[in-house]
Amino acid sequence: MIKEKQNQILQQLNEFSPRLTNQLKNLPEQSWASQSHCDDWTVKDVIAHLSSVLTNYLIFIDSAKNEENLLDDPNSSRPEPGNLDGKSFAEFLSERAKETSKSFDSKDSLINELELRFQKLLDGFNSCQDNQWNLPAYHPVNWVSIQGILLWTLFESTIHTWDALNAVDEEYLVDENLAPLLPEYFCNKLINRWFKTPDSAESPSQTLAVNFGTLNGLRIASSSGKLDIEELPINSFDSDAEIHTTASEFALLITGRKNLSESIEDSSTQLTGNQSHVDSFSKWFTGS
Image 1 (cartoon, helix red, strand yellow):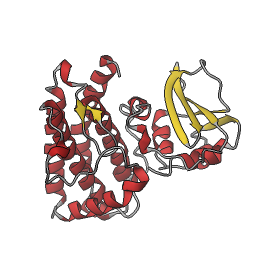
Image 2: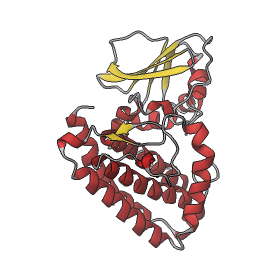
Image 3: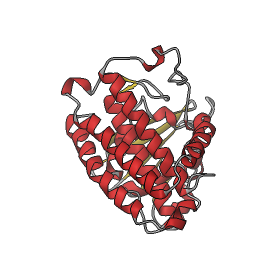
């Protein structure tokens, strides 16, 4: 990831954090108990999960800056990275989120804690020296870097905010300032193993182009049971099919929040080429 894009993500997160705090403060008390877009999580559970995630990410980048391996601690209960994906980790995350949620007795205490934790994490990123961004950083999915944890922060903040706020306000979309930056996360090969395809090694390879109406789009290739996601000039490669959609809509599609068939039916997405991709695409990302 180039420094310009890194700075852009950090700037947008610095602006997003207070905006999120204000939106949460304006939520009616009864909304916190509403079902979110995450299975078995209330709105409160989602925000509690995000708060917990931000705390862990601060630990991860502080350890990276100090060039410490978290797993060297004999009392560490953290899983060895490289063995987990969205599907295998889902049950553990669900239970942890609900337990964390119970520790907050009011919406104000949760919002205040989220605000504090988000600011501490952003301070940690804002204070990074140029030579620190590529230091190895732990994440349960894979060893990444401090830059990689910035991408995880972008993803978790963007998607889980939609999970919570859209559940109580259908007009709320994936943040239009953050959504166009998400391809940096989706294309990172150390990160996107979080997404799983049930395709077997015998399944035919398929290539899908994602056109956002800009010069660059995404190339998603499924081959031998693995997904490869790249950001490329949209006219630089051939594909079996192509979808035209917005960055905000794609964020919902790739994470399984919305079905591709549904998106096509409501005209949020247009597909040309091999129509079998409608079914394949929806299966590829069930792990999230």
